[in-house]
Length: 258
Image (tube, rainbow, N blue to C red):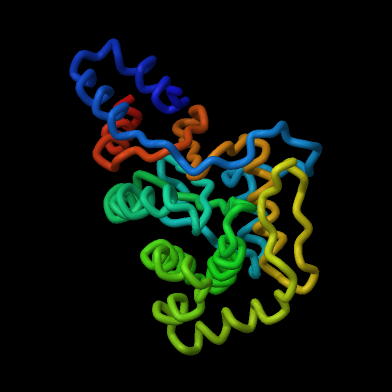
């Protein structure tokens, strides 16, 4: 089935002959994402999009910062991801990493990460906890990359700590451990019936993970990774799957030329 992103490419660019080859290439390189729940959402608390929650997040010094780049960049890309999802790992390694080094670094794209741990993945909720705890001390980007870089290793046995420790200073690793010391109950994950998962009362990062899951229900996220692109106040349809960085870059260049 053609994705929302593909439909936009076709609608927006077919009138431009010079982009015809890019469209065909985009369709060829999009691959299926990891399926999430497909049932209709039940009632849930309303969560504002990241660009509307920015002021609230900044006002709370303990809130995890899970963004990369300049908030004032012309393009905002929000990604709902699961650290144990192979498609999410592929998307990070082959698209997002290059985007971060290129257009995020240049101030053209602001990347927002949302956690959407799938119930089917044993360790994804715990990985989200580590990433959020790192985000509370300003170390999200390093831990985010480490979790995806070593996905094939820690998903085999759930040994996440050594990969987090490998990218943090000893002092910062102790801070992250301290944040998570009260997290004794099972991590929050998305539910098949779209019900709101209950955070562990002793875990300070769980409410933020639940907030992301609820926001994902409202999109709705049907598979991971799912991404939403915004430019000049316009939000393009949510799309699931993997698109290569060269093709995504061409799409961004088209937006920036408008």
